[in-house]
Length: 267
Image 1 (cartoon, rainbow, N blue to C red):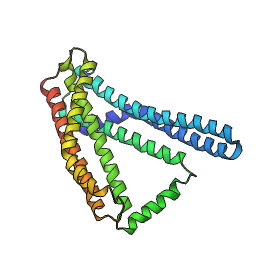
Image 2 (cartoon, rainbow, N blue to C red):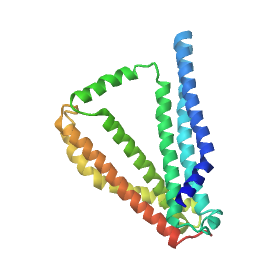
Image 3 (cartoon, one colour):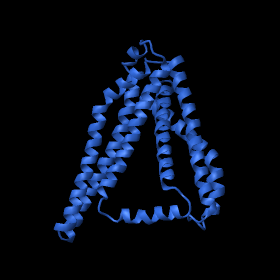
Image 4 (cartoon, one colour):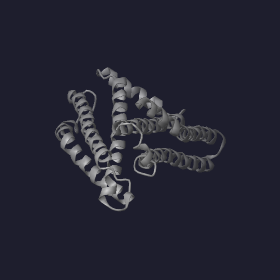
């Protein structure tokens, strides 16, 4: 049943998101073309105007793509689970946990994909610049001191995926609590999210302060790859962020499941 729910979720959302992401990549290609043309065919002042205009359009498009994805997946959860569609969803012979998990998987993957598209778009727009020339020596220095750039890049994307999952489940928890906070569901959801986010930040301080507060002071004066404490700091930071996200995700899921399974309010 979970597989069928996932298939339905992806089928219902794919067209919208793929169009948005195609638009983001299209604007990135446009930005690359305008920059190349402006640098080769136009004088200084006109070139600056064109570059400024396309840069603003590029940034706005990427921001719109990420925000549109977040709003779409969050509002879909609300409409499906607590809106008018909720009456139908909860009459199906499907456990509440499977409803939550199917929506969490799809929304997290779309959010993660939106960030990947943003990074890809930035990469396209920067083709032909000196960014690649700057990164090569940086990665070479990492390898010289025994660091594996691919491992750290992979770790970055793992943290990114975890953050997308936790970001969604915290919104789910806020949406499920919202109707019990105030009579206005939207207002209640916002209040609940602010409280949950504040608690998340407090937990983050408790988990990460021993890492950043104690080890960072040792790295402030000599922050380079030759410092033997740097690798320890990076590993501790990675594990600390993962722990923060795991705890937050489990608590957020428990709240969401509890509120939807035992205290559902569709009125």
